Length: 253
Image (cartoon, rainbow, N blue to C red; front, side, top):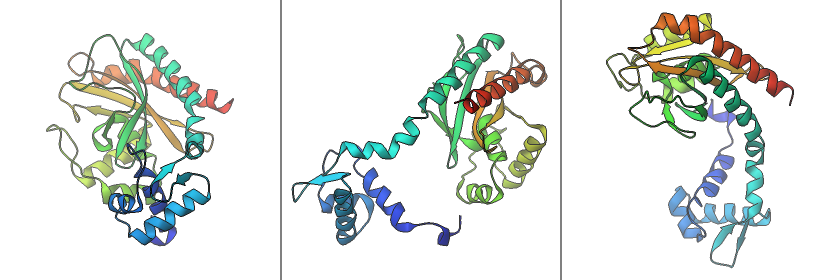
């Protein structure tokens, strides 16, 4: 995004709020050190937060107040959405016998927001809600990248480090761009052993009411046991129905 379309002071204000993560109270000097701001700038932001009732001070130390939770209320109110997503994923796992997950894009990574694990383990690393993985090496990541506006996609490529996790990982920008174009045409993404050897997954997007992609859902399985052809014939229909069910359920909220 062009610099003249952002509000730098807002960004710095959020940095001040985030600096309290794991810290109950801070002085102006503490905040300045943790955010890279000058003491004068840190003081102005802290006094502004205090004036808004989002922080309090005894004259030396500043603490955030419970009112700060209101900033995250919009996200918290969306938790019922995630419950809907998880219920649908459980049905996908019942139908396919494989693990099903949902994720959102955050910068150059995906963040797992819901998951229905299969009884058998398919990855060396444990997956759970909150797990972050590189977008370029995952089926949900590629699906979400394919749905980005051109300016958002350019921003992604300017920030992403296309690290190789296996010999199959796409690490070249031209190759990844070509893959994303194919995904847009196909409406689904298949990734075979690009994040971890032995792992294959297929993903589709869930569009919100504004038709912009918010979630992707996928099914993962052991590559030696499930072929790409089987994913297309058996798993893709289940995922497409799941995506439609999630969209419809959210539309009725």
